[in-house]
Amino acid sequence: MYRTQNLPNDRIQVADALRGIAVAGIILFHSVEHFNIFTQDQIAHTLAYDQLVADVLTWLLSGKMYGIFAMLFGLSFFIMNDNQQQKGKSFSGRFAWRMCLLFLFGIINMAFYDGDILMLYACYGLLLIPISYLPSKWVWCIIAVLAIQPVELFCLLTGYSIDNSRFYMLFGIANEAHEHASFCGNILTNLLYGFEMNLRFNIVSGRLTQLLCFFILGMQLGRQRLFYNERDNLGAWCIIACVSTYLVFSYNLVDLSRLESWFTSIYNFSMMMMMVSLIVFAWYIFKGFRRVLHCFCVMGRMSLTNYLLQSIIGSFIFCGYGLGCYNYLGTTYAVMIGCGIIVCQYLFARYWFANHSRGPLEGIWRKLTWI
Image (cartoon, rainbow, N blue to C red; front, side, top):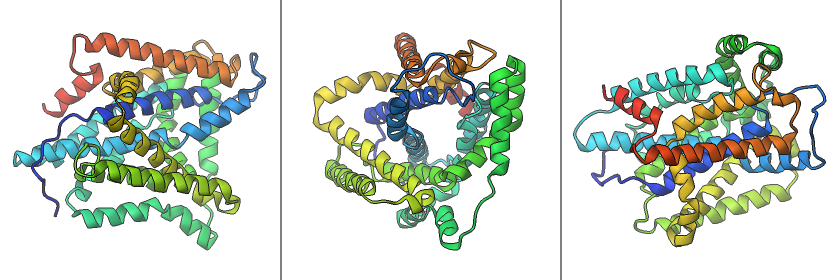
């Protein structure tokens, strides 16, 4: 059974920066996808290099930003849980209540954007409670099993195919509502079908087990205190960077098209770890790098608020009930809109933190957690 090391868990600024980068990346990729609207109509304003922009941002962001967000979720769980253990208290019941609150936030977010991840995070988060009692050697074993994509590997070895027809049917219903339904019609469609559609998307995309893997990995990296500049942690991040970079480049040099359904998620995992390790290493080595990323720290401290706000703003901009930009803006212009959303949210965060220590939803979530 794991027991606390009774070491102080100071605020980790590089984790805030990573969280802010993840939120900004999620906003940009949602903009590429027009916030889950894939119209078959001719888009009015396009540019010749739209497809190139979409391909580059998909390579950089898809499957990586959500992974960073999930990993830091596990890290936050460890910090809160460890702080309570140091006081001789159990955090399990309180965290379960915290996940119920997150699920409610997810319902609000789902009403605006059917790609919400908070409801699934709340469900997966509950699994961290029993796993947190296990010793580290068993936790690493669970991470290893989940990292190899066991469901996709089973399908590859046995030839079994998962029926995804229900997912595509739900996606068609939701897409039609986003294009043509009223505001209330969108909310109703999202709430009726959004959660099931997201769960099925996790199966289709290979994230069913990977999401839990990221949660547990974040918790375990917290146990190892790797996000602090202690002992030989920078050396560990350097090794992780070298191994993950080697794997990413190796995947790009080998034709793995026959294994795509299994290997895509593993590739995204490797690329995500390459990004995280390089950022953490550079953060502690170069003072100038920390100054450059400071703006992301501000956004990262308000990640829940920013995530919900981007759903409200983005859906209004792109959905038919709002400005209907899904039918007017090509990928490049949509990404410009996403950059505008990021800048506005950064300015709002700067304004808010001038007088508050936590973001709006973060403060509410904390107060209700400890009620």
